[in-house]
Image 1 (cartoon, one colour):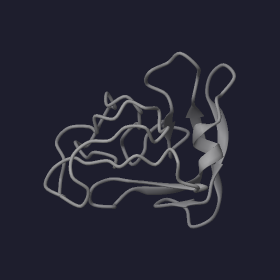
Image 2: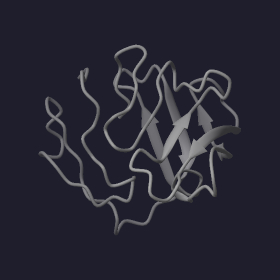
Image 3: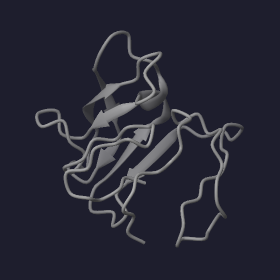
Amino acid sequence: MSATTWFSGTDKLAGTFETGTQGKDDAEWAIMFSTLIFDTFLFATGDFSDWMIAPKASITTQTSTGDELRPITSSSISSVSMDILIYNRSGYATDPTFWLDKTTRTFGGRTYNSDGDAISASGKSIL
């Protein structure tokens, strides 16, 4: 499925947002995961041309002021661990925000924001 809009969840990746019917891939859906024990996130575009596997703590731990370098496990641009820029400031609805490319601040041409207002240079959504 190729999405034309960003995911509508606004829980800052806390796992408290639930919508749609799980497994119904022709529409947006999300399950609550706030009570599940896990330590890794996978982020990907709908066609998986761009993806990233990151430790939960790298994404959810608040940053002190601005962007901070945080480690990820692997991605579509690196099969080994690397650091990426992440904003996760208290009081900012758009955070966590992150980029795979530290220079251009893009995730395969896109910026990921957790409030559904992410910017897409290519029109692809990040799942």
